[in-house]
Length: 304
Length: 310
Image (cartoon, rainbow over all chains, first blue to last red; front, side, top):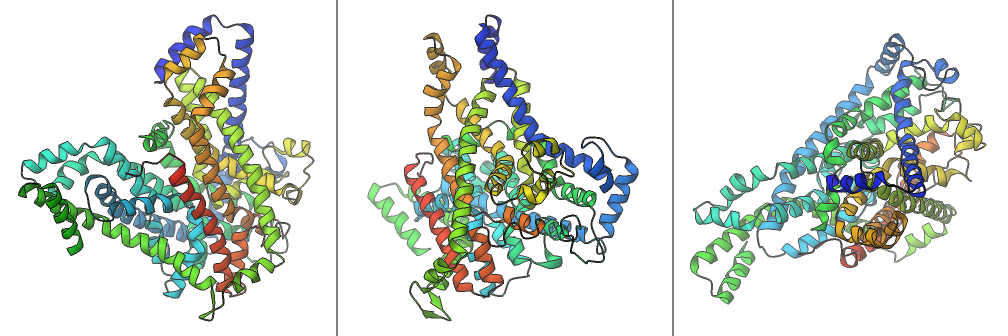
C-alpha cells in the first residue's frame, strides 16, 4: 500500500509547482515539530538520571552527566526504604504476568467460541462484550473496589489480578481475528476427517492464532502495567505496584514537598531514574513491537 | 447445559438436518458454552455485579432504601459542581486538541511518500503511550517545572515562572489536556492512519486528476471517509475524560494543594469512600459517571456503524 503511495508521490515530486512544494515543506515541518513535542520529554528523561540535582538546575537540559552520578543515583534509589522499589516492581510483574496468563486463558477460547460456534446467548454475550469494552476501565474502579471490600478481598493480590484479567477488548479482538482470518470450512474439513471439537480447536485454530495471542497479550500487559487507579485503591502500601509506588516516592521528594520531614529523601534525579525504571518494561515491549504498532492494523481489525 | 441441547435439537429438527449434522451442532454448542463460560463469569463478576452493587449502594443507606437521597446529597456538595466544571473544561480543550491535531497529523503522515520517514514519525508519536498512568504525570512534573524543564525557555515565554504557576487554576485544564494528548494522541494517529489506508486509491487519484489539491482532497474525501473513526475517538475520549483521576491526583500531591484533592469527579468519589467513609455517596458519584460511559458506549455500539454485531 505504502509502496503504491510513494510511487504516486515520487512521480509527482519531480514536477511540483512552487506552491505545492511549499505546502509539502510546511507539512513536513509540522510533523517534525510534533515529533519533537512527543520525544523531547523522553530524551530528557533518559539524560536526567546521569546528573545530580544541582546539575539539573544549573546545566543545559540536554547536557549529559556522567556514569558515576548515575551509579550514585541508582544506589540512593535502591537504598530507599531497603530497596522498596524492587518490591513494587516485583509486585507489578507478578500482577501483570498472572493477569496476562488468565486473560489469554479465558479470552482466546471465548473469542473462538463467539466466532466459530453457535450457542444460546452468543449474540447477547457479544453485544454486552462490545458495550463493556467501550466503557473506560476507570469507570468500574470504585464499584469494583466497593464490591471487593464487601467480600473482604482488599489488600489481597487477587484484588488486582482478577479485575486485570477481565479484558473484553481481548475477547473482541480474538472474535474478529477468528471470524476474518480463519475459515469455517477449514474447521469443517477437519471435523469430516473425524477430529473432535477439542482437537479442532487445539490442532487447527490454536496454531493459527499466534498473531492475536501476541496482540491481546501486548494490550493486556501494557494496560495493566500502567494501571494506577485500581491498585491504588485495592492494594496500598508494600503491596502496591510500581505505578502507585512512583506516586508514593513523589511524597519523599523535598523539591515538591518542602514541608516534608521524612528522614529518607529522594532527589529529583533519583525520581527521574525511578520513572525510567517504571516505564522500562513497556518501553522495551514497544520497541520490539514497533513494526506492528505503527501499521494501523487496529483500524483494519475492526473494519471488516 | 440442557437448554443448550434443547435449542440445538430444535434447530436441527426445524432444518431437518441429517443426524450427523445434529451431533456436530450439539458438540459445537457444547464446546462454545464451555469456552465462553469462564469469560462470562469474569464479565459478571467484574462488569455486571460491581455495577449492580453500586446501584444498590447508591439508593440505600445502612441497607435501607432511601431513593435519590444520596444523589441529592452529592449534588448539593459544594465540591460537586466545580468538579463537573473542571472536568467539562478539560474535556472541551482536550477534544478540540485531539480532533484538530490527530486528523491533521494523520493526513500529513499518510501523505509522506518516504516509508521510513512516515514509519518513524508514527512510532515517535506512539512511544509516549508507554507512559500512561502515573509515570507520564511524573515526567510532566519535570517538564512543567521551569527550574529543571527541558523547555524552560518555552515556559518562560508563556509567562510561567514556577511549577505552581504552571498548574495555576487558569492553566490547569490546558496542562491536563496537553498531558493527555501527549500520552494518547499517537495511538489515535496510528488508528486514523489505518483508516486512511482503507480509502480506495482510485478515489484519491480520480480527484487528483480532476485537479483537487491535497487540502481539497483531505477536506472533501479523506475527512468525510474518516468520520466514523473520528466519532469513535471523540466518544471514547469523552467517556475517558469524565474519568479524570490520576493526573490531578499526582499534580495535587506535587503542587502543595494548588491543585485540589477534589478537582475531578473521580477524586471526589474517592474522597467520599476513603476520607468520609461514605460508600453510598461514593457509589452515587461513580454511578453518575458510569451512566455517562454506558450511555455513550451503547449509543456508539448501535449507531456508530463501526462494529459488526454478528
